[in-house]
Image (cartoon, rainbow, N blue to C red; front, top):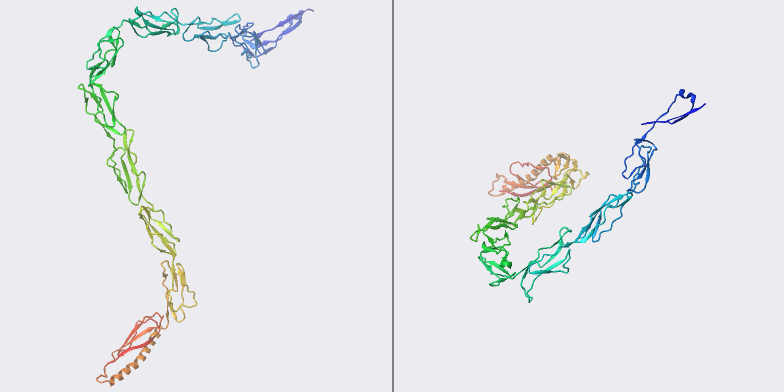
Length: 630
């Protein structure tokens, strides 16, 4: 049985048909149903174009399966012949960077008397420039480019030559010639000097007018030119003396002046010169530059004290010219700010003056003080501030008139006079100090003591002046503990009670009377802050005081009766005496017992019964003092 071979392959975008190789019997060829396997695969797109390389085998394919390699060869202007790039798994081509190196031309040498300028490098396609040193001109190409021919790179032009710039022959002059080291070639920098021809006897026939030497130079560093025109050889001439109106010639008085001789002028007083003051005898018997002129002028403008005028460097001013005045800092211009030079030679209007700047009048007042004013308020003036006694200055003690920019101002405002302070006085021990307002001059503080203490000293103090300072006029008082005392004689108090000599504020005392005495008042009393007892201390009075008084009077009567009887008997025996006359008077002094507290009383008796009145309880003795009978 014979066999036929079947081979099939097809590639479409995104689809690849697998190759199938079958060996089939010839007699079943038409009955065989072929089956194909389709694989869907990713690919790389056409790679970018390279300037430095090209594909060895050109293709029209636009999609390349992963793993496909393309071969390139470097272009003739680059080193290395061939390389490959491959389609990678990430569907990008492998890098071909720096694979082909651009070829370089040799670095050219600097031309003699010139320079080569390499801007970047000497690789294929780069360009270089040439230049020559000053005084040399470039012969040839000023630039060259690195090009390729076949596989070789080279510069497209030869380096230029720098040749010395030349000038043409210097200009010839009449009646003269030039001197030079070389009379055929005049290179850049060559100097030629001219001279005038001499007579047969080598005498001077001509004057050289102009610069005697010129030199070869160039403006564009290519074409040579001479630095200036040549001088002239001119036959000597004579200039007549120049004359100007209202002017005076200062030079030697001569009838003729030779070439290049000069004359200097000045103007008569009251005139100003216009033009140069010196002229020179020039060729063709002419003076140059143009002769000056003298015109009537004003003298320098008036000077102003503490001021200046502009322009200030000139001595003479022509008619119509103007000057401006200004004052020094700290001064004000009074009058016209500018003056004009009049045709008559004087200035108009009248010159101004510079007056010292002044500050405005100082109108502010200083409460509790006074202000000392200067004679005027000019710059530098001082206003002083002084506080009254007992006050101190807070702020600047003076204000000065100063210049601020262009204004005159007082540099300080009015200060404040504050009352001086005595400071807080010390508090008394066991007491307090009360500050009513403050502790400054004129203020008063008050003192008080704690409960149970009394104030010894002044209850207040005032802040008063002491010399130039202030101080409290009184020392702080003392707070002394309050003391109450019991009377030394207290009749009827029980002896067994504990009685102290001194009691303090708040202390209590309880009183009891002994038997035979009655307590009149409160049995309890308290020592107060004013050293007094409240309620008032009670007293003890005897319960039988009335009986004692009555007995005392009866006893007195019994003592007096015998005396009266004796007087009556005596009276009966006296001649001429009237036995019926009454007893006139008997005086008895009653002295209380010492320490009883009862005041002495005097009892008077007569024919009436003796009566006693108003006696407090007391114990005493009765004494007969005197008697008188008619």
